[in-house]
Length: 224
Image (tube, rainbow, N blue to C red):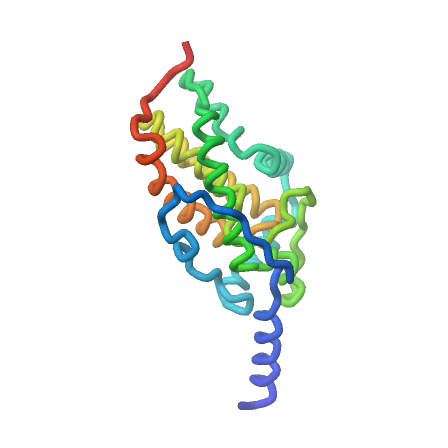
C-alpha cells in the first residue's frame, strides 16, 4: 500500500467514525406495533462512501442559491408538512382525517426517533467540510437529531398513506407530495436524499402493520 492509499484509508476511517451525537436516547414504542421495526431499514451509506459524497455534492449544489418559492417550500414543510395537502383537499372538497393521523403519528414517531439514534447518522453539514463542500443550511429548530430517517418526510408520508386509504381515488396526488417534503428538507440542507427514501420505507411498514388492526373499516368521508 503506497503512502497516498494509507492517507486515504486513514481519512476514510476518520470520516466513518463521525456520528451526529454521543448521546444515546430511547423512546417507548406502542405494543400495538408487531413488526420488527428496528430491522426494517438498511444501514445508511457510510460517511466515506461514493453515495454519500454524491449526495453531499447534490446538497451543496441545490442549497447554493434558493429561489423565493424554494424558501417558501422549506419553511412550509419545516413548520407543518401536512399543509402540502391543503390544495388537493380544497380542490376536491375533502377533509384531513386529523384524529386518525394524530393517533397513528403518536405510534410512529417513537419508531422514527429510535431509528435516528440507532443509526446516529451525522447531518450533511457535519460531513461536507471533509469533502471541501459548503452546504448552506437554512437554520430552524427542527434538525437537532440524527439524520436517518427523515422525520418530516415520514410525517408527510404517513399523511399520504392515510389520505390514500380514506380517499383512494386521489392517492396519486397525495403520494406525489411526499417528494416535495423530501426535496424541501434537502433544500434546507439538513437531509440526504437517502434519509427521505428510508422515511418512506419505514412509514409504509408501520402503516401496513397497524392499519387493519386499528382502523379496520376506514371509509371515505367528505365535508358536508
